[in-house]
Image 1 (tube, one colour):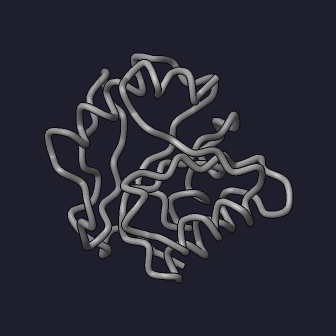
Image 2: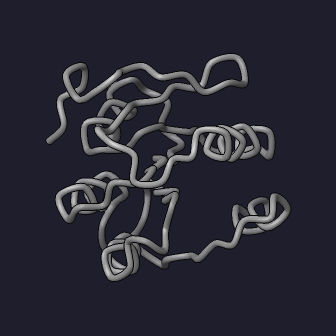
Length: 137
C-alpha cells in the first residue's frame, strides 16, 4: 500500500521484509537512500532498534518512524532512537505529500546536526534546532 502511494508521488522506493534487511540495505549504500520510512512493527528487528543502528552506523539522512502506536512514550522512543519525525498509521496521501514537499523545499540530504520535526496543521515544523534539545541514544 505504501509503495503504491509513494509511486503516485513519483518516488522510487524499495521495501525491506524486516528490520535487519532494512538496516543492511541502507548501511550498504547510504547515499542511495535520502529518506527511510521505518515501520515500528517489523520482524527480526523492530523499527526503533533499526533506527538506533542506522544512526550509530553513520546514516545522517531523514528517518521517519511509522507506527500505529500514538502514545507519547512510543513516539519519544522513536525520536530518542534517532528518528526525525514520527507518522501514524494508516498513512494518508496528504501526509506523504506534505513530507515530500517539505523535503523537496528544504533539501534534506545529509543534513546535520539532526533536527526533530513535528507535523502541525498539515505542515512540518522544526522542534529542535540541534541535538541539545533531544537526547540521542
